Amino acid sequence: MTKQRRTILNVIKKSNEHMTAEEIYMKAKKEMPSIAIGTVYRNLGLMTDAGEIRRIPIPNSPDRYDKSTIPHEHLVCQKCGTVHDMFIEGLREFLQRQTGIEITGYDLNLKFICENCK
Image (cartoon, rainbow, N blue to C red):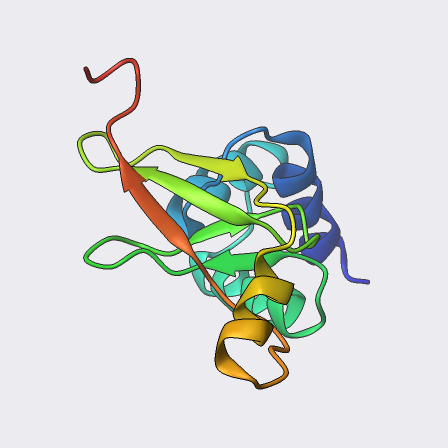
């Protein structure tokens, strides 16, 4: 693993947030001033493809990145854009029963208004 990739992964693993690539870049740059934004984007793609992190697509907003690769859902605040983890037990099995097909994966973002924005 390159130093750049290790730095990016450490930034993601240390955070309790679901950061954008730009936010990851800004934090990685503090640890490694020579890192380039293109390096961050390239490594985020490689780490996502390798299953080391999870990309969270957010409509009309930059993608976010999650350190947890355990299957789970996300709550997205419609006002501030904050992303929170949510675990719905048995959802995949429920979807399989309803559709009659094997579900190999899914991305589910639930929209809500967080307590800070209410």
